[in-house]
Image 1 (cartoon, one colour):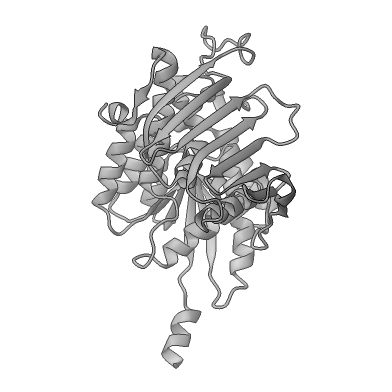
Image 2 (tube, one colour; image 1 turned 180 degrees about the vertical axis):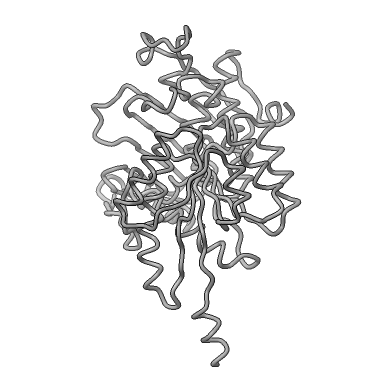
Length: 385
């Protein structure tokens, strides 16, 4: 018994490096700081620390250092590139929150590095299906690391509650999933990289991979084909960068057909700031219907037999969340799950794996291609390249 206690007390420190210290990189730093405070009080205590930051933009590095100081964290070491960070030996886990188009090379460099580093990569996994597939294959050769994809919307308390409701069978066999995101335009990023499809993968990859991931979860099935209609109708039309006008769509309808016969639909509008909720999700089965609303954090569930009067409204909360951040606490829970997977490596895989990342991108790519071609696009087509 004494040996067990000593082993628990000596739980190793998990050292984190963050590659890409823009808005999302600093959001991860916020979450890790709050998580460190909580797990340090756990039994047995778990130690984690952000030891280093990497970014080619000095301004971003300085903002990261300032935030670390504001959070009363030990000053992390800074590097201008991810290669230096990996070679430093200062971290055991790497959070990749750099611009989308950099993910592929950074991931391949981490996976091929002699020292194993666990990876939490922001969505999308990569900007193309082919690059995602290469990362998946490379990771298969490294059983000593785990890779988790940052599709954290599944952790938002109302969404998680709706997922649990669906999994419980309360709604019966899911037949339809409808997700509406009506929100503000894309934010300004470093060098405006997110204004162009070649950098972001396109709006349906960059933004909507979250929702395609949720559709797969709710449908408990894999996608077969996609039909989409979308355009640039309002946003960014008067912007010019290096002589080029942005080409990212700002609204779309996307229909996804799944291999079990269920269907999903996305209704996206990025000039709808006058919305009570940013996300509204509806899942309908042959027995009942469930809805989730963000940020109101409300879930409504009803059965066909009970009609309108039988609909129950639930406030969704998760007491584990100690920092709400930019995504209603979901990033905090994402890190909690990632840390747990690191500690249980061999007994548990990442909660959002590379297949989840690949298929969420594949649906988005199919949607972008469908808009371009004006036809249904099969997932088999985009997976085949």
